[in-house]
Image (tube, rainbow, N blue to C red; front, side, top):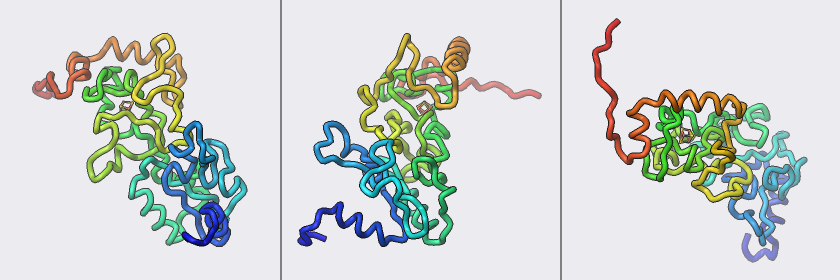
Length: 244
Ligand code: SF4
């Protein structure tokens, strides 16, 4: 399209009006993402969202020729399977409005949380927390992990056959969500009030969290307490005969 004298946005709008389906690949295309971070001198936005607000380049009312809104394969980066899976479903006419979540993401990957399948789950349960990126413990309390709120099957689908951010020692920063690029605090830190993380699991009341985490902390096995702040296992699981 170079040399036509038309901005890309003009082309996108013209082509979208004729397209059977419009797919936004990646969080920038979906919601604005990193390119829309302050001061956003480019006035960047997503195809059908400006951050968390419907609108964007095509407008909130846009629908493709089949009646679908823009399909947001959000993620930074997006998992290759999410792209090929979505395109395969569209090619077979097996992806409808009911298969998209409220932010336009395909539910086959967005109905799972990053927390599901994380190898640090046992540490999470006992609030045995990492203090450094190489530690084995849960990354929520100190390292900024919001995998309990982030939509994506990263820890069950895995990347390149075996990896994920949390498995690599990097906290989940919720890159499939609008406005993840500006959390209001440095990545890899957990904002707290009175020692309690501000971003708690979305479906857990704060009082429950406080009560449960106090109990869990009191019951933390030494194995988890010690391993949580190590970069390798220093206390292996106890072996003992299993009797009925
Ligand atoms: S590191 Fe994050 S995703 Fe993993 S168990 Fe802890 S809170 Fe959940």
